Amino acid sequence: MTTAADRSPDTAAGLDTEAAYSPEEVHQEFGENPNEVRDTNHYQDEYIKGFVDKWDDYIGWEGRAASEGSFFIDQLRARGVEKVLDVATGTGFNSVQLLEAGFETVSADGSAEMLARAFHNGRERGHVLRVVQADWRWLNRDVHGEYDAIICLGNSFTHLFSERDRRKALAEFYAMLSHDGVLILDQRNYDSILDDGFSSKHKYYYSGDTVTAEPEYLDDGLARFRYTFHDDGSVYHLNMFPLRKDYVRRLMREVGFQKIDTYGDFQDTYGEDTPDFWIHVAEKT
Ligand code: SAM
Image 1 (cartoon, protein in one colour):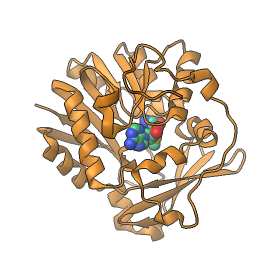
Image 2 (cartoon, helix red, strand yellow):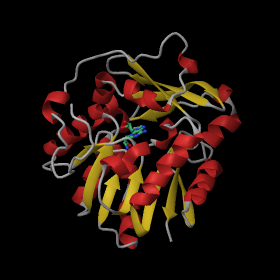
Image 3 (cartoon, helix red, strand yellow):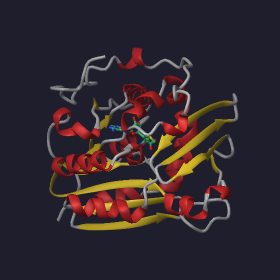
Image 4 (cartoon, protein in one colour):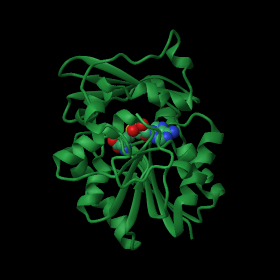
């Protein structure tokens, strides 16, 4: 594995993409006190091969395409966007959607496991993704050029555990955007989880009911979710920071975004009438 510095995104960024992707099982490492793991760097230990291999069962590409519809494409087209940087590529769902809609797309992520899987997924759909391994906190060091839009989707920003890291990441996004660029960033509706209390233990079902995601521990500084895959009984966890909607909007404003619209995602949430996700569309000018 090479580092991302000085790499051009025109290649597979030096990743040995086919070799790096193999579906072997490894256990996540949270130590003796999993609820004490509140570390921005820990995402690297959470997206291990086994979990990455199951990720597409979790997000379910077809179901997600149906629920997202053309929302993101419409937002980008309405602003005349041509070049997009996907900073949280994951397994590549949004990057592939953007490529298929004709956007010039660069796919970044801090996780080599995720990028390898994204590249593999892209290849299976007839695309060669331009992937770059880059952590958001040092994005400008590792990704070059200017973009009309940056997307950070799938509740990714939640992985940052300190305000300093959040401000740094947002400032890096801001700096990579053209003068009238737009940042589209989504997040789980943690307000509802925090305010309804842990006792509600809302379960989120994905891909029909083949995957369950549910909070296992919650306080103001940690939302620890358990992901259960019913096909083989495997269980993984993510430790995330429970971002409140207005806090994220304030941070965006404070790093310089002038106009922030926040949309609710009203997909089926098993009887809940509050959205599961918020989508922030932040404009530079
Ligand atoms: N957008 C994808 C989706 O919707 O399926 C992936 C979402 S996944 C919840 C979060 C992604 O953010 C992971 O691929 C992870 O590697 C990446 N990530 C988390 N923290 C990061 C950081 N500090 N810098 C770069 N990538 C990061």
